[in-house]
Each structure stands twice: as C-alpha cells, then as structure tokens.
Amino acid sequence: MTTTSIPGPTRSPQLALALLSLPSLLIAIDISVLGVALPRMAADLRPSPTELLWMNDIYGFMVGGTMITMGAVGDRIGRRRLIVICAAVFAVASAAAAFSTGPWMVIVTRAVMGIAGAAIMPASMALIGRLFPDPRRSVSAMGAYMTCFLVGMAVAPLVGGVMIEYWWWGSVFLLGVPVMLLTLVAAPRLLPEFRTPDAGRLDLPSAALCLSSILLVVAALKMIVSSGWSWQPVVAAVVGVGLGAVFVRRQHTLDDPLVDLSLLRRPGAARVMWVLFLTALLMGGTSIFWAFYLQSAQELSPLRAALWLVPSTIAMIVASNLGPWLGRHVPPSRVVLGGLLMMAAGFLSYALIPAGRSGILAVVCGAVLATAGVGAAFPFLMNDLISHAPQERAGSAASLAQTANEIGIAMGLVVLGSIGTVVYRSRLTASTGHADGSWVDGFRAAGTRHDAALLHHVQDAFTSGFRVVGVFGVAVMVVVLALHLARSRPAA
Image 1 (cartoon, rainbow, N blue to C red):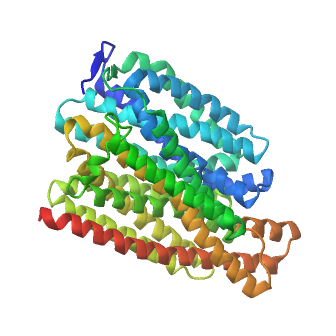
Image 2 (cartoon, rainbow, N blue to C red; image 1 turned 180 degrees about the vertical axis):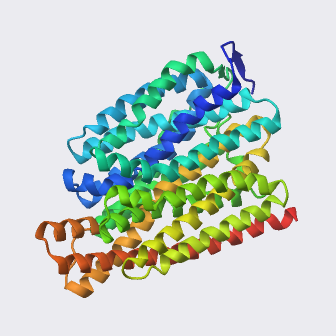
Image 3 (tube, rainbow, N blue to C red; image 1 turned 30 degrees about the vertical axis):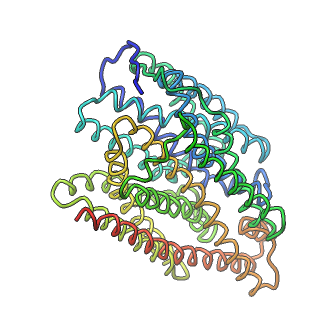
C-alpha cells in the first residue's frame, strides 16, 4: 500500500504538531469533564438513570466505536481534509450541547461530537509520522501528542469545576468551539495533506458491525444497571457479541479489511492491548466517583472540589515527562512496572476511604497515585505496540491502541458505575429499608426534602460503593501486572 503526499504548506513541523495536539487535548477533556458537570445537569435536566448513563458515556463509546472506521475514511479522502471537516462538525455540536433543553439532546449532540473526535485522532497520528520522518523525532512527537491527551484527562475536573462555579453547566461544552475554529482556520495553512490512493473501498458492513456490536453490549449493561436482569438486556448482549464475532471473521476474509487484526498475533501485542484496555477502564470508571464524592458526599462546591484535584493534575504532568527520562537510564519495562504498581496503590487508597473529612485526603492521594502511574506507563505502552508493528501497519496499530483506550474509558463508566450502584442500593436498603434509583436520585431527594438523616445514609451508601470500586480496581491491577510481567519475561 502506498501513500500519496499532496503538496501543501508545512511552515513548521513544531507548529503543526501543536495544532494537532490542541484537538487531542480537547477530546480528552470532553471524555471526562461531564463527570464534574453531571450533578448540576442531573438537577436541571432530571434524567432517568438510563439517560444519565448515556449522557455521561455516549461520547466515549462513539469515539471508540467509530475510530477504526473514521481512520479508514481519512486514508481515502485525505487526513487534513477529514480534520478540517470534523473540526467544523465538532464546533457546531458543542455549541448545540451547551444549550440542551433535555437529556436526549445532550446524548445526541455528544454522540456527534464523539464521531468527529474519532475522526480527528487517527488522522492526526497518521500526519505526525509524515511530519517527523526521522524515527527518533517521530517517537518524541508522538509522546508529546499522547501527553497532551493525558493532561486533558487530568485537567478536566479543574477546568469543569471553575467553569461551573462561575457560569452554568453548558459552559463546559463551549470549550470546544474556539479550539475547533482555530483548527478549522489554521489546518489548511500548517498541515500537509496525505491520502492512500490504493486503500480500496471502505467496507461499510464492517463499520456497521463494529459500531452495532459495541452499542448493543453497552445498552445491555445499561439496562441491567437501570432495571435489573430481564430478557431484553440478555438478548441485546447476545446479539452484540454475535455481531462482534461476525465482524472479526469478516476482517479475516476481506482482501482489504477495515482493521488488520493480524497485528494482535505479533508477540506480546495482545497483552499490551489488554493492559491499555484495563488501565483505561479503571481510570475512566473512577472519574465519575471523584466528582460525586467531593461535591455530594463531602458537600464541596464545584470549584473547591476541582482544587482538591489539582495535585493529581500536577502528578500527571510530572509523570508524563519523568517517565521518558527514566526510560533512558533504566529498562523501560521497569518504568512501566513502577507506574502500574503506583496505580494499584491508588486504587487501594480508594478501598480504604475513612469516614468524615479525612476521606478527602484518601481520595486525593489515590487520584495522585493513579494518575501518576498511568502517566508514566502509558507512553511506553503505546510506543511498544506501535514500534513493533511493521511500518506500513503503524497506523492500524495506533488505531487499535486508541480504540482499546477509548472503549476502556467508556466501558469503565458502565462497569464501575454498575458496581457502585449495586453496593449503594444494598447499603441504603439495609439502613433505610428501601432504595430507588441511583445515588444521583438519593442525593437529589435528600436535598429536596432537606432531610439531614437521609443525606447521611445516602452519603454513607455512596462511599461504601466507592470503596468496593477501589477493591475491584486492585483486583484488576493484579491481572494487569501479571500481563505486563508475562510480556516482559521473553524480552528479558
């Protein structure tokens, strides 16, 4: 497969990299910023438990579900052109989301934003390889790009907290408008154009199978969380898994598949993918608990809650730069191991949250350890997967890795949110005799009635759910550590 370069202005690769990194930063912020805005949005829009879950994670699922497809579209119409088109779509959808009048308007506009974000990320990574043809500079540029993504995830609570404190919840969506307008104007002037003329036709059935499989499985999880076990979620899950199997089989039979799954048969690649997926699942899933614990369980204002998360933001930035520096002095596998152990310690801190105000310190320490750990390990994991792929398949490897990361973040919101909800309901039922809906409903009911006793029971039940989520996180990290050690052993 060959790639055609269409002449275009490239005044400075560094400026082009900065331009490509800005949307990455914004896309990462939009994945997790809603967790901070959700308490205010829930009070204003009054969503059902199912609508609440869809509002929070539809963006991440659309990013993960359509990224492979949109990467293939960029190969055919040109990466720069795709970035420009989707920047405009993202800006319009962001403005519409800011003025949503109901839960389903939020869900639809965030779905559109997710599709646009899914197009921008793989196109950007493909252009980075062309902007920096030297392998060493390319790795450094990719590291800077991924650092921006991680920093976006880390600063989202602070940015969201400040904006909600001084404006309204819709302001968090308006962040995307100026950034995407800048991309729309500057991209034709700073970015070159590349496309693959012999990439073949886009396999639309594969694209439909991929997205349908992901959304059906997620819908099944949501129905179970919302209304318990019944035949509807079971059927949805079975159909979703079946469509996923058909998708995988179809990729093996096509001459020009939507995604080259043979990459996963390379030594250690599948283990790295699982590590990326599981760590993203835990980081994405715990993000919703931070906001509700600090704002609702500890009754802090959005701004004060955001300020308590500043240490985790600093830890992410420091670790993202310290990790590569350490990798030049010690084996990278040891840096990754240290980062994963820090993550495990962070989730252990969540499992041991004490009662009262001292719980804030435990949550902040857990957030610092978890974000620092993933910040140090993530660039090495991404580089390990991409650098071991053949040069002509590096884009497919990056797309697979990003898809695993995005789906992991979104799936974590469902899985860990479900665990927390089950524990919350059980504990609240034991203390009050009944429990309806989610903890959002519990906090809202206690506030509406000005019932201090009910609020105390809801806060205690929610914190119990957070502790169990921490225990689950430690258990998953044991699996992650085992996968990493198994991956490192042959190299040693």
